[in-house]
Amino acid sequence: MDQLSGIHLAYGLYLVLIICGGLVAVLARSLVRALSGLIVTLFGVAGMYLLMAAPFIALMQILIYVGAVTVLIFFAIMLTRTSEGESGSESGRIGRGFLGIWAAGFSTLVLAAVVIRHMPKAIPLKPEVTMGRLGEFLTGPYSLSFELISVVLFVAMAGAVLLGFERRKAK
Amino acid sequence: MNYLVWYHLAALILFGLGLYGITCRKSLVGMLISVELMLNGAGLALVASSRLTPALDELGQLGTLLVMGLAAAEATLVLAIILIVSRRFGTTEIADIATLKG
Image (cartoon, rainbow over the protein chains, first blue to last red):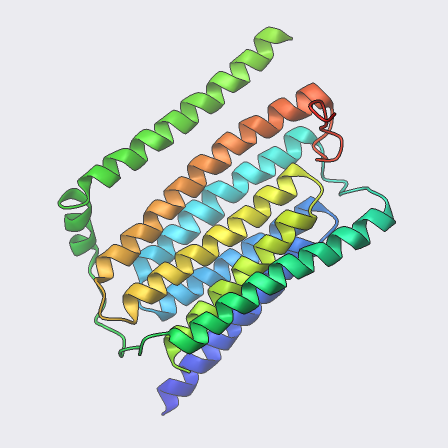
């Protein structure tokens, strides 16, 4: 019983982290502040992975997202000097905000209704999958997807470098 | 309501926030941040579905890993595109990037 309330407490903490960080990420005028909110959200999601006894995915979340992706976005902000935030007229802002709330709220509510009504029964948490087992899967039956994702990453990197070169040559 | 529903609701919150951001943000970097939020929601839903149902554990975890790899590749490409757009138009506000607009 004590352990159960601990789980609920941890879930609530991570949920608060996710919601507050996500709100800051979406609503903040300054993009650097929005990125800080995104980092808080990423840590909250990593905590949820830990709560589901998937520590490898949680570590990868921190390593890839917090370590790599947010640094990339920081570079994007720095190189384009958009840290001052977003300008724009107030009248257009309110109309867009209303449309955005309508779109996001409607689709989220429909999906939430489906989730609540038709979710299959959850089973108690299975024992943790070892990292070796994951590695066997990745090199055995899923080796093609593993190779494909490395090809995709390589193509993305090469494309980014190529785009950067072309910009410099055209100058 | 069981645990599975709660985790999926957290993923849905991430999805909704990302969708709101992608419609309301006025700069490309802000939209990129919103897309990352939505991808995180997808990963959370995948892991929750594989951990708390009789489905294969490895499938969900490796799927989330692939989503993370795709997110990294996408962020790299979007960074290059944002750089070029800001060099060519002098701004990353989506309202000002209107060369093709009739």
